[in-house]
Length: 274
Image (cartoon, rainbow, N blue to C red):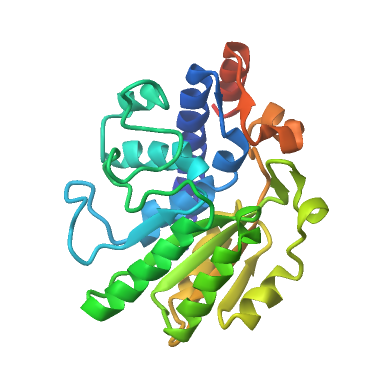
């Protein structure tokens, strides 16, 4: 990538973090940690890689994205608003009565959401099904999906992984948000995933490990490699920091999964991201 492209994506990531923490802060509580950890991946996908058209959200043959860790919906909403799928002022209605932006992604209520998610593991299975459907239709679309590391403890993830490999779904590219924490503690303390890369390889997937999951250049290069796969789906493992970019969220550690955000903290975060 050219330096100006990198600079654009870095600046856009900061902007998306501002929109995300602002909407959660105005509500007063939300899934801060897991939203902020996957911002760069979303930005690279939506501003560089995906074949989409916000003016034609149901365009045939478009690429699709599934936020399997559906609680990170607020970060995706920030991207969709910035891309023009809906008015940015709607971000202030996050998870409020009658909102079209619930805390977890809902394809019925929110324009631009390709699949409802919330029950961990199910979004990933749907992404696999969408990739298979695309193969049957021959529409050349790619399916992208983000799974959480805590979510990866679900058996349904691995059932779907086996099917995707068996079907040679090379149009499916997954991302693991490997921030090392889940709701109740550290991943390694609850059900460790290591060696995560070898697990995915054993299930028949190509695997790419991104050492810095917040480096837009590394992420873009990984996606480029994944697109070269001729007969396998690809899992890109992103080593990320939960709550990335906001000091009090990073410092909160495991408690930032779903945390209160005071008005003072909201203002502080916006200053840090200015």
